Length: 355
Image (cartoon, rainbow, N blue to C red; front, side):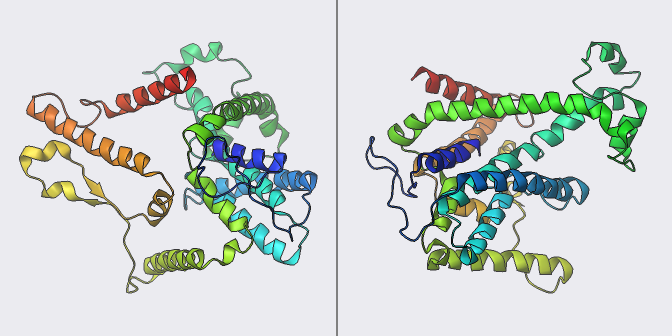
C-alpha cells in the first residue's frame, strides 16, 4: 500500500497525470494530458482534509474490527476505507467543481496509506504485545523476571492502566489513565513515522526499476486512477462490475437475515477429501470463489499469476514427495513452506538491491 501511495504522491506533487496503462518503452514517462475542465489543484487544502479524514477513518476501522468485530476493513491491499473516501470525494466533486483530480488523489493516497497502520497487522498487534508481559505473566513463564529490563517508554505501567485496557469500563479522559500512555504513544509514533519514511525512501529508490525496466502495472493503483479520469466512474464495464458486486454482497447479507434468499457461497470447499489416501499429504486442498481476488487478478501480469499457481502446486507436490520418501509432511514440518517463503523474500530483496 505504501508503494501505491508513493506512486500517487509522486504523480500529484510533480504534476503528472499517471496513466492506467502499462509502460511500453523503458524511458517513456507516465503522463496523459490533464482534463481541460479540471480545476487547478489546491494541495494545501487537500493536505489539511487528508489530515482530518485519516484519523476519523482509523477510528471507524478500530470500532469495526475490534469493538464490533464485524469485518477486517483495511486488511486487504486495496483498502475499502480508501475507496469509500474516494467515492465520497467524487460525489462532492459533482457539486463542487473546484475539487481537482490531483487533490482527490492526494487525499486518497494519504488515507489509503494511513489506514494500513491501524489494522490487525500493525498497531492492533503492537499495542497488545507491549502490554503482554504484565497481563500474561504466570509462575510458569516467569515474565516478571524481565519486567525491570523493559524501558519505561516501551509500555505504560500500573494496575489501573492494565485493568482498564484489558477489561474496559475505563475512561480515556481520566488523567490517571491517559498520562501513563503519553510517553509510549509518542515513542512508538516516532518509530512508526521512521518506519514508514524508510518504506517511502525504498519505494523512491526502486520505483524507476519497477516502472521502467520491469514495467510493473501496480494493479491496486489502477482502480483509483480510472475512477478519477474524466467520465471514468460512468464507464459501462465499471458500472456492470459494480452492479454485480453490489448484488452479490446484498444477497449474501439478506441471506444471513432471511435464509430463504439464495446467496453465492464464497466459503472454501475442501476438495482434498476426494483424494485417495495415498495422496492425503496434499491436503488441505481448498477451492474458493472470491470476486475481489478475481477482479484484482485481471490486473496482475500473467507471469506473476503463473508464479502463484506454480508455487502453490509445487508445495503440494513437495508434500506428496516428502510423504513418499518417509519425511514429515504437513503442518510446520517438511517441506517448510513458511521458511521457503521467507527465503524467497530475502532472495528477492538481495537481487533487487544488488541490481
